[in-house]
Length: 261
Image (cartoon, rainbow, N blue to C red):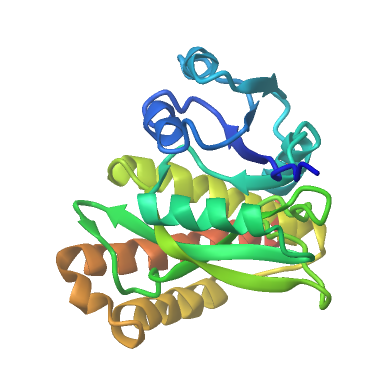
């Protein structure tokens, strides 16, 4: 009797990722059975690079939000397991081995998380609350999926599922420069404010200030961001700024009026 080994797919949501995509896919080349990419309207060489790796490339230019876009991508996955990657991430050899072994074991109702190590402004961030940044990215395709949150989406879990932590790091090249950080954080802030507004939530400038200060204190002092040198300080400052912006955005949306004609 022949035992069929479970199959594994890499799933991704992308837009204009030609700078990172090739290196990302090279880190999974040869040991995954399927690559599924959901693109939201790239105008660079993203599609061409995906084709070089035999990826199943789908396009949905009407951005739905991070959660819905991931759910749409997963609907195209045919493999037994789905492993989620972002284009700016790389799989280390140790993590690869852990993932392969987990898929081969195929334990029932089990999903997998692992540590993500981020490279920010010239160094790996080991503090600031950023490491180990455990992300839940591997699970049986038919077992679960991401929720429908517009931002900060999460894999849906329940009490019947077991969560195991795999060995090895996922390397994350998160920001190219300060401009990239500001653009990326502004997008997250916008999505966060939109989501809160739809739920009837409100905010204030004072809330933004309080949360921003708390963010800096937590990252730089409590989570020992000072041990990450100048990068730790800069990241803590920028994170506090981003925190203030999202509360300010919600305040503008819900508490201010447009000019009268």
